[in-house]
Image (cartoon, rainbow, N blue to C red; front, side, top):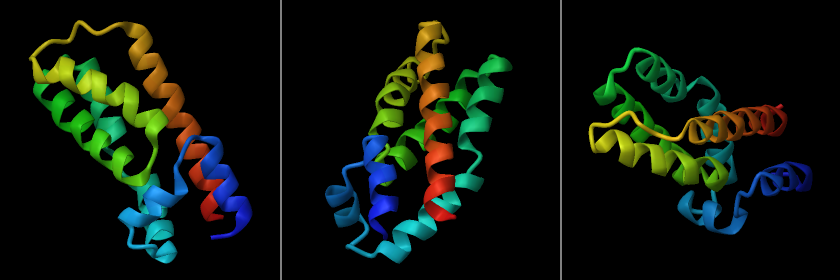
Length: 119
C-alpha cells in the first residue's frame, strides 16, 4: 500500500497496524477486501429494512455491516452501527434519528475513501 493510500485510510480513523494484523500483514488481501466492500450490499439492505419496518432484516443487515466495518478497521462506521444493532437486536426500531444520520455520513465517507484508495 502506498503512503497516500495509508494516509487516506488513517484520515477516516483506520488503525493501519491493527487492521493489517487481522489481514496477516497481507496488503494485497486487504486491498482486495476494500474493493469487495464497494459491492457489499448490507448497508443498502439495512436501509431498505428500516424503510420497510422489518426489524429482523434490519438486525441481520446492520449486524453484517458491523462485522465488516470492524474487520476492515472502519471504526468511525463501526461505532454508530454497533449501537443501532443493539436496538434492532431488542426488536425495536425507536433509535435516535441522528444515529442513522451518523451512520449514513460515516458510510458515505468510507465509500468515497475506499474508492480513492483502490483506484
